[in-house]
Image 1 (cartoon, rainbow, N blue to C red):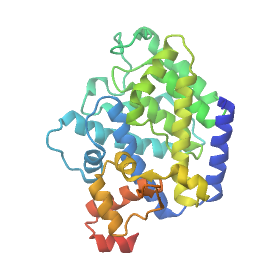
Image 2: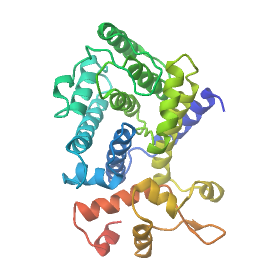
Image 3: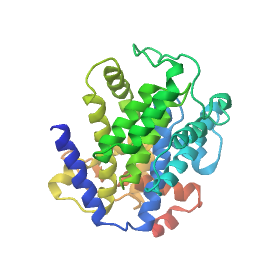
Length: 326
């Protein structure tokens, strides 16, 4: 499939999603809560943060601390969630162009109380990406490069996913900050997507090596196609999550998309034992079975699992009460 064909597929999925607007408020809240934790978990994990999904949820949603984890890792979770909130707020005002100040504010929040001296400021020193052959711009050139980048960003035309992928690549290649470049670039990418009515795109932790290699390949003179395809795939996955929650699938297509319990456990950070218990209690409906008799779940259950955990932790509901809510 060519890049244009992939973009057409994304457009068609977005058009399907638009037919359901306005979306049910409860569904929107559930998915937004899930995306907030998942985006924070995955974006930080790509940078080496060792918090699990569940630990990230505890910190972001409950303000709790996790034994054995550093203060920096806690702050990275809190800061990313705060930066994401700013991104969502900025996305509501589609008429206002994304500014240089907006990008600086996002990075400032990411480094708040971690590296305050470098928060919201361009780097004044040369930097290198550990283990990479990429040569990054001289710090003296960064202000001008950023001015040119923002001008491009404010005038860019094209499919939202294409513009988002390009913005991500261009910003991280300028590498304007001492730290927080990747997280800022991913948040900027999602600001562009959300402004255009797309859900945020998630670069999964398991795609970390592919993501880094694709970036380095492009930054050292190779094709950018691998990186662009990875971003488009992420956009498509997020659209699928929304559509799975909103519309029934044809039988054949459903079978292809269903998750085994182990896959659902990996995507949610919950244990198989917990998922089996919730299934037994009627919280997670089973959509089918493999020829060997293994239970299969809709991808929409990823968000459902997050909702169940939220109801347990935030509202302290019992299994019976959660069943009534769902």
